[in-house]
Image (tube, rainbow, N blue to C red; front, side):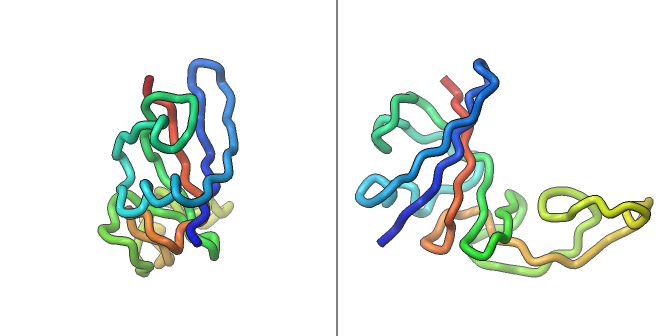
Length: 118
């Protein structure tokens, strides 16, 4: 059973809405990538167009748009998604190897972040 938690951002109102999505609507999100625009009516929502901006898996590892596929990989990064700012350690040249999830929504994803486009 595929179940997603959708965090939908409403930029015009300055709010965010959380929605639980069960089968069969959740199956339409499988295989979609970060940056794809989908129809909200197909998901049973009141919004017309939604863009996928990110998410995280069941273990809490974030999705990165620059990692291809739906797998978990270790990447060496100096800034960006998944790297927290630690006082005194985020100096110039600081890099860290972190575990992140790819940009494709699979069955392992728990939370999907979206923003209303229209």
